[in-house]
Amino acid sequence: MAVVIITGAAGLIGSEAATFYAEAGYHVVGIDNNMRQTFFGEEGSTLWNRSRLLSTYKHRYEHYDVDIRDREELDRIFSRYASEIALIVHTAAQPSHDWAAKDPLLDFTVNANGTLHLLEATRRFCPDAVFVFTSTNKVYGDAPNRLPLVEGETRWEVEKTHPFHQGISEEMSVDQSMHSLFGSSKLAADILVQEYGRYFGVRTVCFRGGVLSGSRQAGVPLHGFINYLMKCAMTGTPYTILGYKGKQVRDVIHARDVIAAIHAVFSQPPAPGEVYNLGGGIFSNVSMLEAILLTEKITGRPVEHRYSEQHRAGDHIWYVSDVRKLMRDYPHWRITYTISMIMEEIYAENQERWSHAL
Image (tube, rainbow, N blue to C red; front, side, top):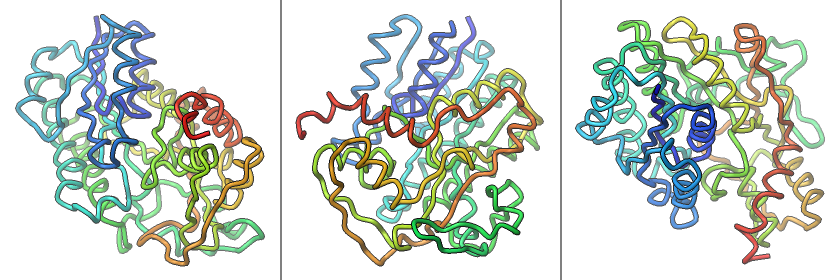
């Protein structure tokens, strides 16, 4: 039976990937040591999701409580399955723009060194496998803020005459911009993934994600703003808008649309080292002010929110992914969830988890 290795298997994208491939008949090997609890406290714990995978998929899902910084342990896992490994989905990361500044060494060793260990294990033990890395739009730093932006009533937009009006393409430079420490560690990993593809011929793919969302995300202040905003509305917790008048725009993509993209490149791998921007694009994007209004409409509850003029260092004013390259190379892949659908699902499927505060 073909093996799929998934790092960060109890997180949002990792658990969706584990679910998808277990149900597709693969033997799924999950690697996740619940570092989200270290990063975000008890509310960030993914143990509940790990338990769900183990109880639901039993013999089709195997879990290793291993840190991706532990090269020897990774080598033991990879050597056990070796040529049976068909796909590696690497989602494990320190994912917070803000948290990275608290401990740059931990951020870098998880995001960059951990990725290097996985790439080297792939090269040594399963060189024919496809290696998919969930990178981030933060690799572009704050370069998107230099685009010609036009202020509207509830959002910023890019001038209609500009080539990036329909989204930022893979042609945007990653140089000469402020990345944040998180963006820097992910960029280092992104380049390593490309290099192992181009230099060693490992079948690597980078997906530079926008806001990845879905009902299984924990919803914490430092990561996953859509989920956290909905959680605040449902629990009566105040939400703080950070700068840009609340008109900053993000594209949001559902985890299942991410998995569909991953499976597309697994089924028909592109040239080694390929890079795709991946987000909701023009099909699913929202400003902070618009997200608050939509949250209030869905929940029927007012969102108590505050405003701080201080935006996050290196943060984007407007970021919408241009997904046309991916759609061109994989014409059967499409965005199937709109922002409204995503937020309605988050609300509907978290009633029990967050009901204690309702």
